Every structure is written in structure tokens, then in C-alpha cells.
Length: 255
Image 1 (tube, rainbow, N blue to C red):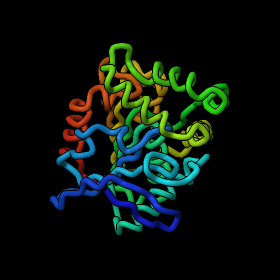
Image 2: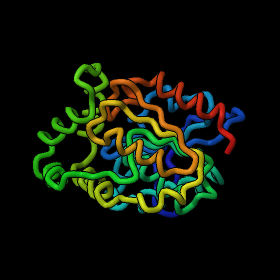
Image 3: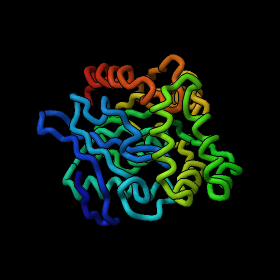
């Protein structure tokens, strides 16, 4: 798996491009995550050629993380430039989907379509949580896992998610939470014209489905798919259903 030098630093990414005649897709993980925060069903989706980066400070990418969504978005734009990708589909989970939205606003000519998972045009974060992740990282990580996953989620999935969070420095996660708390583009949603699929878990506690419904109501060209019983990690709990929703959306995609 390669690293690439960009205008904003070196970024590691999992390269799942197969050479097939399909659009490039950039899969952007959420706060405290890594490329492993996406299931194989999305990383290796037959409908696209996926590039799955670790954001700066996450996974195998160096750096101290970013405290603004715009900065992470510029990192992703620099990655596209370094890989000579003129236009791509963007799939983001939670904070990653906020990054995708910012790119669609500011660099819409580079965005072919958006698949946004468990997110919103704003991502409220309790200020106590922002402080706690730095002061009490182990205990706070346990709390996060309870909020992120359904009570009956497979233990191996929860354990893998815990390992990713524990491998990310608390200072980086704290910056991620700050970036999310500062993000609010509700007033500008009408300026996003890219075809958009919004996927949300019915029981998502961290980004409730009302945030997804708000997105779809204000976007010009959006479709909502709600996964029954799904949590904030709905794409990992129900990877086949998530992949099928993307397949159906792309089948009717005219962007």
C-alpha cells in the first residue's frame, strides 16, 4: 500500500484501483478512524476504483491532525492532485462526510457525486467530550464505543473499532472533535449540486437521522436511505445493505 507526497505532506492510502472502467472514488473516514473504518464491501466495491486514505495523524499517515474540516478537505484535494485525479466520487463517514461536503462546496468541479454516511450539515459535539478524550482517553473511548455501536453489534467489530481508536493519539481525536464542533454549512447546502446519497442508521446516537433528513431536504439532488436498527457504524454493521444502496444509487446516477 503506497504513500504519496502531496503539496500538504505525505499521505498513506489503500489503493484498490483495479483498472476497470469505473469512476475513481475517495473514501474518507471519520474522527479517530482509519482506512480500516470502511468494510471490504465498500473498499472493493465493483462500481468504483477506490482510494482509501488515512487522514493526517491517523492510521499510517504522519501528522498531528487538523482542527478544521477545511484543512482536512484541502489534504484530500492535495491527494487527488498528487494522484492526478481530476474528478472523483466522494464517500465519507461522519467527519469524513463533512470533509466531502466542504469539497463539494468549494471545489464542486472536482466532485462527481457524494455518498454521505451517518453525518449532517452540522456535527454537534459536547464540549465535555472534547475535554475528556484528552484527559481520560481510555474511559472516554469506552463511552464512545457504547454510543457508536448497537448493543447487539458483533464483538469482533467493536473490538476492531476500539483498536483503531486506541491507536490514534488522543490529541488527534480531540482535534477531530473540535473540527466537527466547528462545522456548520446548513446555510450553504443549496450550493451543493453534486448528486448525493445519504445513508444513516435508524438508531444512530451520534448523528441522529434527523440530521440526515435535514441534509436531504435542503440538497438539490439527494436521496435518503435509512438502515433499520443501524447505529453510527451502520456501514460496518450492515456492509452488504450499504453497498447495495450505493449500487442502486450509482445505477441511476447521471452526474
